[in-house]
Image 1 (tube, one colour):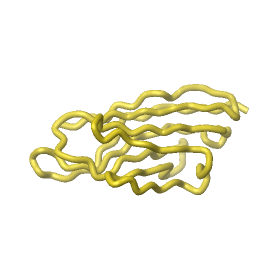
Image 2: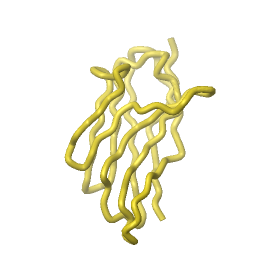
Image 3: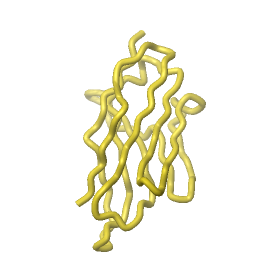
Length: 120
């Protein structure tokens, strides 16, 4: 099985910073891409940032210049450095991994989510 374990969420004032981490473990052969999504109650889950195994990165327009995604391939871990946080960044943040398992099945996996709350 595959597990994604997130950490680093919390409460911060507007203008502050947080760093999220997500470690993938289990029967993993290789990881194609890892990313962060977020979801507010009543809204659709949206992409925040995504990074592929070769380093191609995509950001949502709303976080460009403020958030930085990075990845440690050796540790199967992805990070999201969030600076200049705004109240509208408040959401549950979910880690995602597009990966191949050791049984050669490809799958899309999600973490349990971590709450980020930005106060004004």
